[in-house]
Image 1 (cartoon, rainbow, N blue to C red):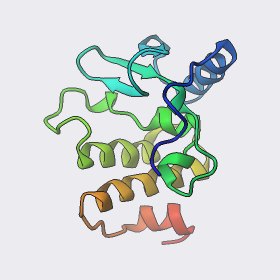
Image 2: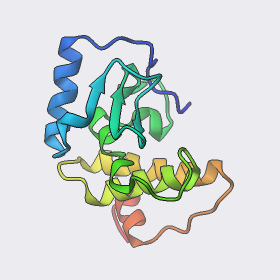
Image 3: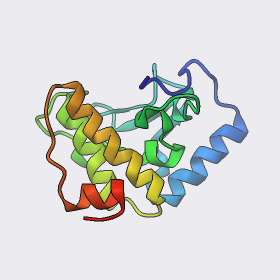
Length: 146
């Protein structure tokens, strides 16, 4: 759970074009995305690039929200807007912030994308032993009402 598809899957041209169309859909800067480089899909604060690997694709057999996120939702889970902040890379609160803020601010996400991003944010906190009190936004996105 939480692993998505293998990062060792090599993206072919049709995969790359699909990902590029999703990058355009959310209005991200296509110039910072590189394909089939790095160990996994991730943002490099140092180089200001997003490595895209096979784990951009969901694991449709899982029940974990991180596994089920669409390509578009994974692209939206962005660390770039908070580049250079003091939170350590891959800390639970950095990951929480990336998913939570993406669910609020990234355009052209489906309701299910926003739901998975919020559930991912909550799971990041839970995995770190931190309880999150659902606010009205979280309740609305997950349950459909405040």
